[in-house]
Each structure stands twice: as structure tokens, then as C-alpha cells.
Image (cartoon, rainbow, N blue to C red):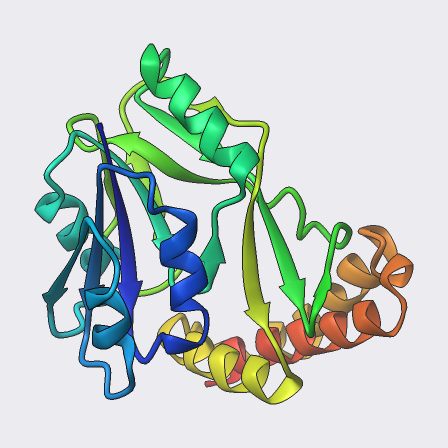
Length: 231
């Protein structure tokens, strides 16, 4: 028995695709923090899908709220721009027949500006998404939250899709907000760390293989690093 937990906020763009991709789950639980678009309407049109309104608590606490509200022991946590593939669905169903671990890392294929990115350390982009809520929980971090699990963590082979950023403007807006949440003021790091971020992503991790898209991504992450240490 599996519950899929999804955080939503003005999430209408991909939500139909996201919910359709997990319609096989025993429960889909959307935790909404005050959407003003058609998010609630879209959720109401999908079977086995519940909507709970919860004012924003921060990423870690908001996701844990959803996990605690889930009816089933096993949960898979998605964002509202992340989509299951049929291959991952089949693997999850197989694993849950006889789980060997309390939690599993799952690979993610990120799309930037309409292009899947397989270099720059952005793939397979593992994170713990499938776990028993009796043996794992989210940290309380406001941003860059993580799942803390008891015991060893397994890994799945199949990935899900993440439609991360459609435009440079969207990237700047989102990363500007993230940099404020994780600000660590340091003039020295604000000078040198952005340079290192660009070199690491573009040259050492193969951003140049992604063409112009890779160059833009490396520059934008370098800018994010600068914001994080200058704020």
C-alpha cells in the first residue's frame, strides 16, 4: 500500500500530468499552501486524491506534515513538477512486494529550458523519495530538506522526470528565493565560490557537453552561489 505525497502551490501547469502519472497509487495526498489558480479544481477531478490545506511551514516541515497525514506506511514524496515514468511505477510496485530497506534513493532526470540534462552532476540526482514513515522522516530545514532514515538506504534504477525550469527568468526567481532561505553571509566566499561553482559545473562535470544550455546553467548556479553568500 502506497501513498504519494505532493506539495502544491499554484501548481496547475504540470499537475494534471503529475497526478495522472501516479493514479495507480493507493492514495495521492496533495498538501496545498494557498493556491489561487486551478490547482484545487484539478485535484478534485482525480480519483483517490485528497487535498489538505496547510499554511506554509517550510519545505521540511511541510513535507513531513504530508507524510504524517498519509494513510499508508509507505510513501513516495513528489513535487508538483515531477512526473512518474511507467518504468519507475513498475519498479516501485515490485520493490514494495518485499522491501529490503526502510528507504530508497530514486534517480531524477532534470529538464532545464525544455532539455533533459544528463551531465553537470544533475543526473542521476539521487534523493530519498520512497520510504516507510515508521522508519524515516524529513529534516526540519526550511530549504534543502532531506529524509533521515533508520538503517541502510537502497537505490532504485528507474528515474522520474523533473521539469525544473522553463526559462531563465523562472530560474532566477526561484533561486533568488532559495538563496534568501539558505543565506550564509561571507564576503570571501561571495568572491571565490561562484567562480569555483562555474568551473566545477561547466568544465569538471561536463557542462560543456550540454552546449549553450550547459553554459547558461553553470552561470546561473554561480550567480545563485554569489547571492547565497552576499545576502
